Image (cartoon, rainbow, N blue to C red; front, side, top):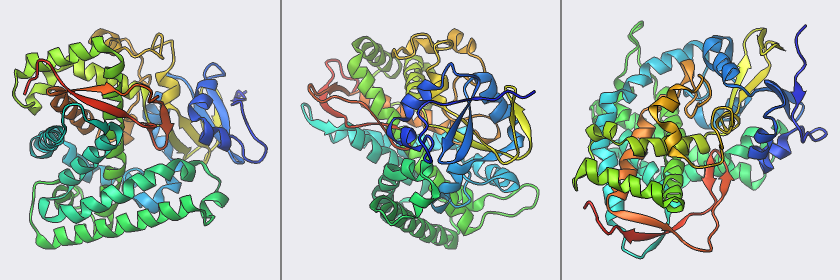
Length: 447
């Protein structure tokens, strides 16, 4: 007899768990821990089965991944992402993944590091003055969006497109949580949040379409991501992507990749400012590995402490939730999941589980030594998802974070400003509410 899952606490009449999800999603996802391997929550009247263990998360995303499509949250993002990898399903998703994946190959990522990431991070660090107080979170967002724009588009196409990216994507990220978890009635209302989101999506889709058409007509391989996607051909059919498909993939990469990098970099230096011992080891590693020269892609394997900090940041500030929809009747943890049912995994719930991450609220990069990582069960740590729908930027994002962090850390310390409390503000990701920091030259600068 299939088990009946517990219902998550905080359910409202008619609205279900929509209000707690919008007000305090982390509190809700903390509250489900220990209430069963599968917990039911409601988006309005719609039930969602939330799996809470690494084993079931791995089953959902990997072992039985073929039994599930993307869920309702991705449906609601279709006006922005179209049929990009974030929202597409089935054969289309598999085909697009085959065409897009080569753009994220290790050799290509090395090229992006050399051509864009190091130079733009250096340019930003050069612009600061000792003693200057900067809005560090905003500067990291600008950096990540600029890197994404330069990686995607050649200089000939990039300036106008980059300006629209920097204008529209922050607007959409501000309202994406409301759009994702609100009942359909709310997303259709002409409220300011909906109008701003929709207008930004229309502007961004228009300017990206124009860039794609221009790039295709030139017929030139500029060595950028856009050229890779325009030139890609399916091995089975020899067909490439249409302009609309390329546009959808570009918007998906821009929106998801830049946000992950920007938020991680902001928290990276915030945590360094709170933990001087971690900061000292970070600076010592930079000096030892680089010896005063700019970081190169080949240096990354030697930056072990830096990568452990990145893992700890990604554990503490993951995406909010992954949604799936059952394609057929199945079972998870003894709970019957009928075809069409919505299923979800909260990375926050998994990443804060004390069974796998002792004292989970403590910032501890050393929990990511090779030995401790090897002891984690599959599914306990999912910053980029898993399985056939693993984020294609799962290698690019940590590379960009590491290069930008080391480039900044070679020259500067970022010191928290007293009296300015910092806490997580939940939008599409766990952004800092604000992050003013004072730029201080290192006493033993590496350049």
